[in-house]
Length: 408
Image 1 (cartoon, rainbow, N blue to C red):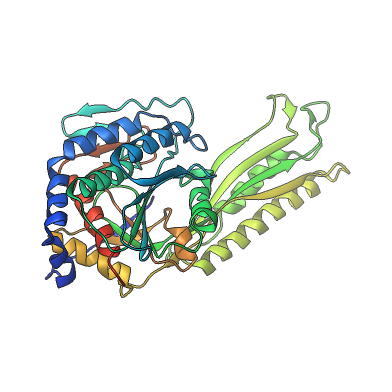
Image 2 (image 1 turned 120 degrees about the vertical axis):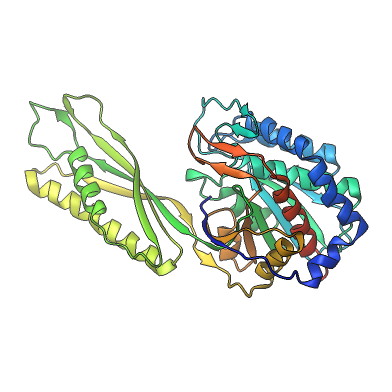
């Protein structure tokens, strides 16, 4: 998850959120969140020490399912993609709000996920992104259930798969295209740390590009077009692509590979490329520039050697995350601001990239919020989470989801 921040200033809290805080059950739940933050941190550590590498979230998902059942959610189930769902007792079907956090991490199988404490700071891969989100999800359920908070609508809590890397939002696509198709009115993702609120979402296109040729001995077959050389030409051309600063648009060659030996012309070389922008048109433009760069690199490599055994290239789209945004005047954005103000908190508003991208592309009002505390070095082995006042993130999540689940 990515956030570019602009600070929201404190102001007079609108009456709606403030009045909701006067409800005895809601007030008790908010107080319990702060009192029970130590339990939330223990949950955060516990979830994080269960490996959840890309496409292998099953073990962590099983623990969330057990926890959902233990807390008394209704209809706890696992869908076809591996998302874990549970419903909060509701008075009616609508409004139907989903509060979600993702199970998966960016770290490969075999990564040491043991969490280390250093005073108020936790250290461990994924400790903030998104183990904090999962812990806030569970803490919200626990506080609402224990305080017997009643909502007129339906709340479904979801621990989902496939948010990171090449997961391509497969959990969200399953949720909105099949599991709860046509049922969801609003969606909120807890992803990352702090008190951020994102209602503009960066889209991305991700490709795996593979160059193939006959290969051969580096000396005896010298003169054949070389997939690795074509790869190099392509990377150099991609590096020269010009993109706008506003809207911010980016590209990155993130992984490369191929070949069998230092003394063999490779039969195959590959790279994985990521392009991003908050603007759909800008994203399509940089995609077209990337396509031309790859095609030209292959032509130049084939022309360089002029042999009948030509290189071929395939460009496989392995990630398509739609861009989109809501205006600040959108009801769900205004409600999120109301909640922060009613609690007396302030936090950044800006641009994100998360599970919320997909439902927003379907026209469903969607937000991404941080889970409190302060995170550092997300997506790195040195990731850390400062637990100081982290309970604020859970209070915000709880009040927001209760506020959204009121009658329309």
